Length: 304
Image: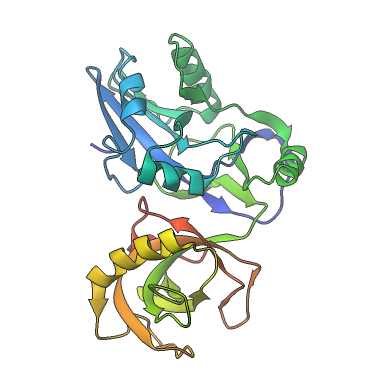
C-alpha cells in the first residue's frame, strides 16, 4: 500500500500556543519513503515514483535496516540555507546541486501502523531512529514549541515561504486537516495551464499562460501569467504544451485575452506568486515560479 500524505490547511495568521509545534515551510517536493528489506520506494504526494529523479537520496535511505514509511520534503538549499523550488527544477534539468531530504514524520515501523500515535511521539521516535545512522543528505526536520509568531517573523525576514504549525497530539490522517496549518509569508498558488497566447515581437514560443483552478469539478479561469520566464523555460514549457493542443477551451467560461490563443488539455500544473485575488477571482500580478510535476491537475484548488 502506498500511503497518501497528510496535508496542511492554509490559514492567515501566525500564533503562539504551547499545544502546537512550528516548523519552517520547505519549498520543494513532498515525498514519502517506503522502505522494506532495504528496498526503497520514494513517492510524490500523488504516488509518482521519484527514485530515478533522486538516486542519491534513494541510496542513502537504503542504509536504514528497518521496514518503515517516512514523510518529508525534498529540497535544494541555496548558499544561505534556504530552499528554493527553482533550484530543484534546475537540478532535474542539469543535475547540478545536491538534493536534501528533510524528514518530519514516521507512519509505520516494522509493519506496525504508527499513524494513531500522537505527533509528538512519532517525531520523538523518528529522531531517535535517524540518529542511529550517519547521513549526508537526509535530515530530521527540527521544530520549535509554542512560539509560532517569532518563527514566522524570522521566516519572513529571511525570505522563506512561511511556516507549518502542527498540533502536538494530532494523529496522521491521509487528507487535508486543520490539525496541521500552513502560514505563508508569500502569496503562492498552484494553477492548471489551460492554454497559451501566441508570442509577440521578439519573444519566442508563447506570450502568456492561461491558468485556472478547479471548483466543483470545473476549471475556472484565474488569469494569465507572462512574467518569470527566460528563453530556456519558454522553450521547455512550450515543448510540453504543443503535445496537448486541443480545439476547445477547457475553462468553464472562455476567456478572451488580447492575443490569439492556443488551447491545451488541462494536464500541466505550475506555481505562481501573486499579490492578491481580485473580487472577480483573478490573480493580480502573477509571476511564474516553476512547473509542479509532483501535483495532479484535478486536485488543484484555490487555497487563499
